[in-house]
Amino acid sequence: MEKMWAGRSRKQTDALADEFNSSVAVDGRMYREDITGSLAHAEMLSGCGIITKQECDAICSGLEGILADIESGALVIDPAAEDIHMFVEAELTARIGEAGKKLHTARSRNDQVATDMRLYLKARAEDIVALIKKLIGVVAEQARNTRDFIAPAYTHLQRAQPVVFAHQLLAYGMMFTRDAGRIGDAVRRMMNDCPLGSCALAGTTYSTDRVFTAKKLGFGGACLNSIDGVSDRDFCVELLSAMALVMTHLSRFAEEMILWSSSEFGFVDLDEAYTTGSSIMPQKKNPDMAELVRGKTGRVYGDLMAMLTVLKGLPLAYNKDMQEDKECVFDALDTVSRCLDIFAPMLKTAKFDREAMLKAAGGGYINATDLADYLVGKGLPFRTAYKIVGGIVARASDLGVTLEELPLSEYVSFSDKIGEDVYDAISLRACVARRVSEGGTGAESVEKQIRFLERFAG
Ligand code: ARG
Image 1: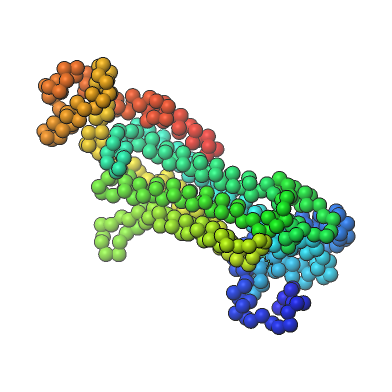
Image 2: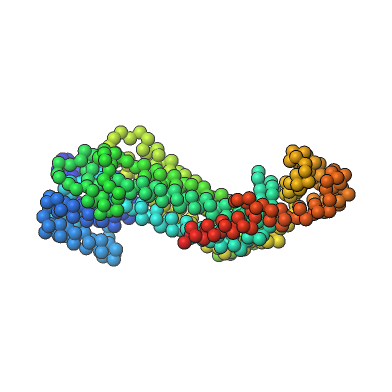
């Protein structure tokens, strides 16, 4: 196929070079956005009197035909094309003749690709936000199911204080709301300034209407600096970093699901639809989906690093290095989507074990803080109470009993302020119920959190 830029060179490019240079296998997926951008551009050219109305009509119906044919499968994107922009333009000219050759007036592939990317990423990012919301809905649902399951919460992976299990699930829900917000912010900024019409880098000699195309394509306006317009890939980095954080959260959650599903914890039983067996050990039920989510996190971090590294040494304006942006961002989009897709049903079908959690909460003296608070209620300063309780815990541990099992005679030997009412004060259920502070694990706060997530999920 003759190159569109064949005028300058006297020699054919090497076949290997063509293959190396081609990005259509990757950017072919932006065909819709490429055509949408071209439709707006053609309309602008005609509105500004740069092409005729007839030429514009021919271009637009040609482009619409190409779009319909790609979607129906009647037209296959040529894998030998240099990129999607060249493919669409060549196909248009093949279909409508001379008018097709006018489409590229007052634009360049540099501003075209920067525009296409924004349009494509916007659509995909919105899909990801929808998936995040779906997951948030599942988190809220499971939080409702486990809102009165007493469980230990941990610091340093040591049992720390009793909570209702829902409170831990809800913590993940909060992370996902921020993720959705962060992606939304990235999309908003990405759609502020349209690069289309920046042309190769310096703008154009034609009297164009950049605001028209910008508005038509859903941007806030036209970018102010054409060099920045074609060389800016900040939006890729922003979106990638937002996606890297989604993966951080999914990965931490996955890690907990893996721990919770171990026999050592036994807090959760994952549905067999989302676990696998071992080829040798017949008893095994492995949490592969959660492990894969955790594993794929590294990949998305890698995509972010790759993108940053591609950009770091680039002089202005467009450089072919930038073609690499798509592989990073698309891989991250695909990976994050798949992880969200699998995580939601895995969580939804998981069975949480009230008894196992209660049992775990019973060990480890996780009501020691409450015992100290009890003494504070009897008039002792917290530091004094803290010290006394340390001694009580050591004693109980020596005797091999829990704080609930420690006889009153033992208690009073540590402090005469302790009475029979201590047992009510340190019962796990009371400990949880009394965490009434805003955002705490008390019932009212948990209900408020669940409602917040339910509303967020829509
Ligand atoms: N395929 C190219 C990319 O994705 C399109 C822009 C090419 N521009 C150029 N001057 N070679 O970056």
